[in-house]
Amino acid sequence: MLPKTYLIYFSPTRTTRKIVEQVAAGLDSQSIEHHDLTRMEQEFTLRLDDGVAVIGVPVYAGRVPEIFLKRIEKLSGEGIPAVLIALYGNRAYEDALVELRDVIIAKGFNVVAAGAFIGEHSYSTDGRPIAANRPDTEDLKYAIVFGVAIANKLQGDCNLATLDIPGNIPYKERVPLGGICPETMPELCTLCKTCARICPAFIITVDQEVTTKAENCVMCCACVKFCPYHARVMRHPMVEARRDMLIKNCSERKEPSCFL
Ligand SMILES: Cc1cc2nc3c(=O)[nH]c(=O)nc-3n(C[C@H](O)[C@H](O)[C@H](O)COP(=O)(O)O)c2cc1C
Image 1: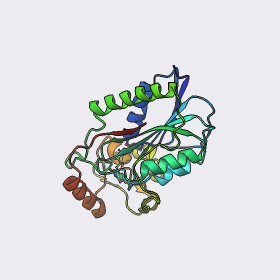
Image 2: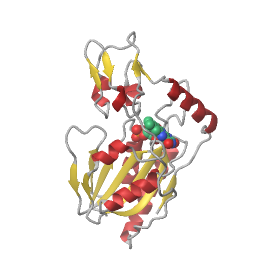
Image 3: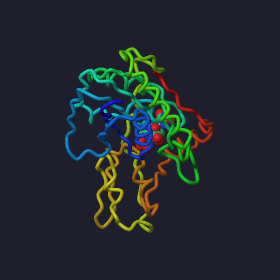
Image 4: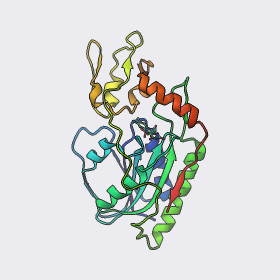
């Protein structure tokens, strides 16, 4: 049995987290330590020299979110095995998994397995669903089985720094974020501050009204999905156009892919 699994993830709408947890369940180690980097109040420093790490991120425009890269600046692996998870919204994961592999190898981990899973798209709404309610039961089962397969592999030789993962180098150009953010519908808002408490970018303040600093928004839509009063909406014309495209071209169910 593996001694310890470290779960390291950024997951504003919690789909990445669900898969990371299921993979860890399949690994079946003696203990699990969570490092949720979604909302970091303090600097994150972690140097791991035993156990296995499961590291998960959502795919943003085919890449690893920049905010995650900043948060793991002081993470180091000292040769321990790492399992990588990229969670995408049923469009494509493009270069995100290759980028994550390269970053995590550069931090000293031994990347032994990687998986691309599907989660409800950040821009999905009840009326305009995109991969709604994923990961579902099938996805979660798949993630556990993947974890079991990794545990078996770790019994043998696991020096696989050259794991063959689809994606391009150089990675696709980053699409700059910022300037677009969800809005609040004052007639529904009770100023409960849920949005301010969960925003991973710390850009929402609630006083007599809700203020959002659009230039630093990562567009994760956590404030939209977790507002208890449905008072936050993402209806910027650029996002509406993106929703149209996703519904038109990416409605067919995709399945997880795993590499080990
Ligand atoms: C800014 C942004 C860019 C995104 N880009 C992609 C993408 O390139 N491909 C894709 O399939 N999904 C994309 N998504 C959807 C997320 O990858 C997906 O919703 C994921 O499940 C969110 O993870 P979380 O629940 O852990 O926050 C994007 C979402 C956001 C907010």
